[in-house]
Image: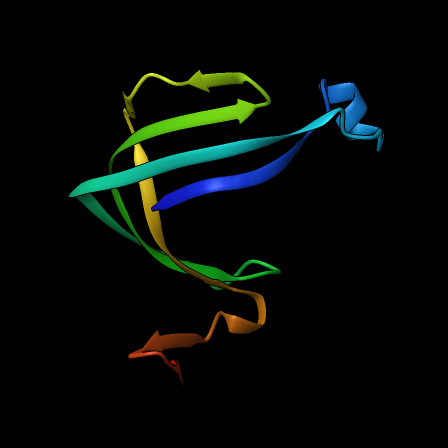
Length: 108
């Protein structure tokens, strides 16, 4: 996944952001995430919960890079590889009994 030059508000601090304060500026964010190899595949289903859910997941590692710019200041994060990453497909609530195949919903 790659995102280039995403414009985001800069609130200066968490307190200002959480209390609805005005942005102090606008930053530009770019990042990339690459998932690699399937270390483990996991399938899970629990239909007995008040909000049932099921999913198929792949556990692996992800490598990440990011860069943010505000005005004349640019911050660049070091490239990193995670110890754990998971990506998958989950169904819950009213979609619990549906499974998507080839872009079309099917009912289990």
